[in-house]
Amino acid sequence: MPFGSADRELLRQVSNQLGQITADLAALKQQAADQQHAIDQTRQDANAAITTGLAEIRSVAREGLARTNEIVTGPVATIGNELVSIRGAIGQLDNQLRAVAANTLAAPEPEREPAEDTRPEPTPEPAATTEPGRLAVEDDDILRAAAGISAATLHAHRDTWEFLVKHAGPDQHFHLPATATHNEGAIEVHVSGPSLVAALTSLNRVSRTNPDPGTRAIAGHLHHRLTETVEDIVTRPHRGDGAEPVRIVIDDRAAASEEQQE
Image 1: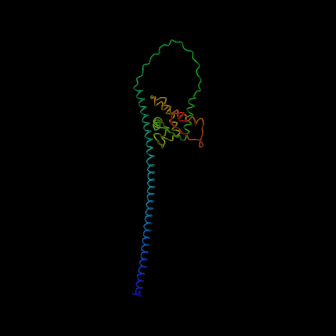
Image 2 (image 1 turned 45 degrees about the horizontal axis):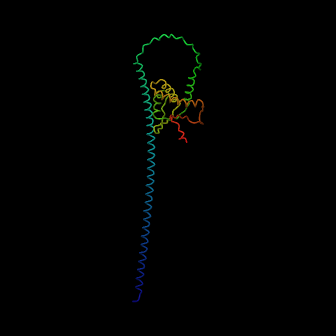
Image 3 (image 1 turned 90 degrees about the vertical axis):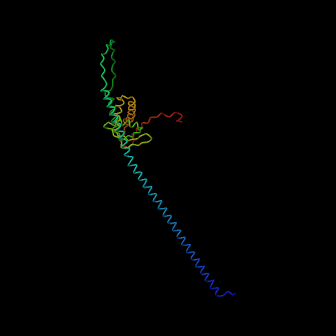
């Protein structure tokens, strides 16, 4: 059967329909691509918003923790120092009460008449000449040098610091530092010149008059270490900037052996 005009028309219609279908498919493909792009963009925006939000939350949390530490740490350190001072004052009062009670209860011993000494009196030797008031002058120099210190850094064990506060705390010139740094049982504080004066005078008195040998030994050692530091200022005085700040370290250790040094 010959291929006529009707067949050509049918082919043309089929071709047009196929072209329309192809165009529709291309449009659908473009719509799908646009939707996928929109989804990807939305996902990126959501991730960025979440990341930014988390960063802001972390920043706010850090600021809150830092502010909490500032609010809590300062008062806690101050309360700790005040408790140490109160304990020192109570200990000082207890020592005074015990001394008064001991003096009150102790019965006076009867005076014994000295036995007559029949030995010939020895020839008196010439008295050694001493410079009158020399010790007092040296003590005054030490105290004046200590009073001139703006702030000395004291590094010691917490128990040593508590001992110092206990015996020097009642002195009118002793003042507790506003802050203290704690590190593995050690404490580091900034002590003023008047507080050093109070520590020197109080420790000197305790090292000579306290009935307990251990207390006398601790007080004497601390007094010696403080005096050594202040004597260095007396022999090499300096005012203002340009010199190392005063630092007192109570941390005696044994010297390293030769093997360790090698």
